[in-house]
Amino acid sequence: MKTEGQARPEPPRGAEERRKTPRAPKAAEAEKRLTGIPVSPGIAIGQVYDTTEATPETPRRSIAEAEVEAERTRLSEAAALSRKQVGKLKARLAILPEEAQEELEPLLDAYILMLGNSRLLRGARKRIGEELLSAETAVQDEAEAIAAAILATKDDDKAGLNRRAGEVREIARRLVRNLTATPFRSLKGVPQGAILVTEELTPADAALLEPGRIAAVCTEEGGADGHTAIMLRALGIPAVLGCHGLTAAARRGDAAVVDGAAGFLALHPSAETLAAAREGLAAQAKERARLGKLRRLPAETTDGQLVELQANLEIPAELPLLDQAGAQGIGLLRTEFLFMNRPDPPDEDDQVSAYRMIVEAMGHDPVTIRVLDWGGEKEIEGLADTLPAPVGPNPALGLRGLRMLLKRPELLEAQFAAILRVSGLGNVRVLLPMVTVPAEVAAAREIYERVARRLRRRGESLPEKLPPLGAMIETPGAALAADAIALEADFFAIGTNDLAMYTLAVDRAEIDVAHLYDPLHPAVLRLMQFAIEAALRLRMPVSVCGEMAGNPKLVPLLLGLGLRSLSMNASAIPRVKQAVRGLDIDDCARFARRVMEQSDPQRIAELVEEFSRREER
Image 1: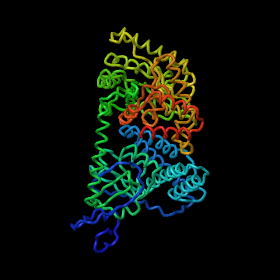
Image 2: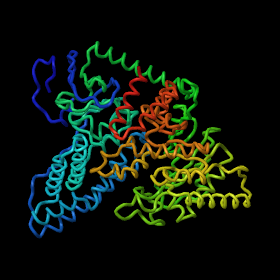
Image 3: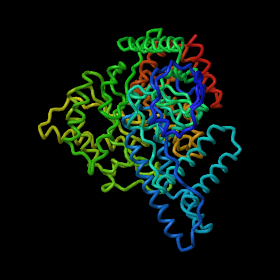
Image 4: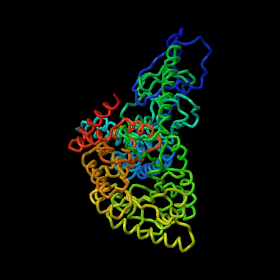
């Protein structure tokens, strides 16, 4: 390896040999600065830990006609193994920050679809039979043909086309590695505080990173618009991608500085570079401390309007984060964690134990428990034997959420009973998922009250007034019928993720249309406005618990539409609170009226950016 300040170059060596060969003691080396694409802001000082991934040996290979069925069997087995691997990655999502989950879950769903009866696998099987190609060669040829067709599409969203082509190539890469039994990259040995250096990082690799362990990431390949870049931003790991010459220059153990905002990696940093990096780290710590001080301050606008900022909770392990962020309760407790990784559904007592721990931990702060939202694209192993699996071309339009629970009332009754048994320990609310018509809420309330009567006869101590029973507004039908649903429900929670998906007929897991997903589409905003106004007319509580709630730039719009309760990932609360404390409600209302006059999503996005910049000044 040749770096600045060396007397003579070393002979070229492979990455594995360079990694294992210790650097001989020598005088301090001159700083070498590599620039790339800044994708995730932040500064890191640490030592390089380089990792490479063995390249599978896949020479083009033809087969005899008698080998066709054997090759197709190999391909089917590789696809099954790949699906299992992606399923394990998906199971790990619960421990990642919510932003990372929201980015990766649709991508992994897309991977699973592509590993089923997809164009990629159908085409590869056809090439095996018609062109007499080995499974590896057929997969690579078909993937490149699909990627080329995607990239040739006439579409202004070039970044989206590149991502979609990359997704196809990534699945082909996984299939080929499994066909050739070539191991995947291992990230288990990365030491604490390391700067990870590699030729490329896939989104699946990024899902395995531990944000508390990795100080920064630098890669030789990659760009700002890919899934990996989005994942690294969601994980909060400083990152620079597209650093040409990186793997040849960096060596395990090298001292380094990374600036994810400026887009550079400095190897053997000079005293000046180290001093500047330390100043940057101090500024980051100061910013975190400043946001931390907001924890005890109210989320109050400049004209005295209080806004309730609550947290969405995926698993109980996230509870400490809520107090650190200053959350005013749990606006959405997803109960699916109770049903996962077990052979059968949890019984009433199992659920009581889980809910009691959470409700007691929250003290007097509200806890909104959403009953099981299963079906559609969601799969839970423990229910697979007792409930019909999502089938058909549009499972998201089938038996899901409250529809499913009303078909299997014993599941709903067990959840209601468990929630009611802990309701006297705190401030509990119950939320119904995927409501579409008022009759569904009425039917659920009848079961709810029947379960309460049964518990009282059994001698259970319940509050005289049962916890409020609310409805999720996440379909166009529910939003348009919100005035009628409001007569049956005690409160609304607007789920903007699904509302945008159903309104725009866009599944973010479908690579051909994911770029059309836009929660700022005027149709989505008008449905939200209709539901909010229906609740406000009856003086009924209404909140937003989708992605939009955690975006500080969208807070003025949400407040201007009349919302005073937002539920989000706990890590987003400090910045949202900071935004709230700088806003005037009258300004927000005027801004929202201006937005709602628009018909072009792009113009709405521009207005949001303009208002955000004005507030920053």
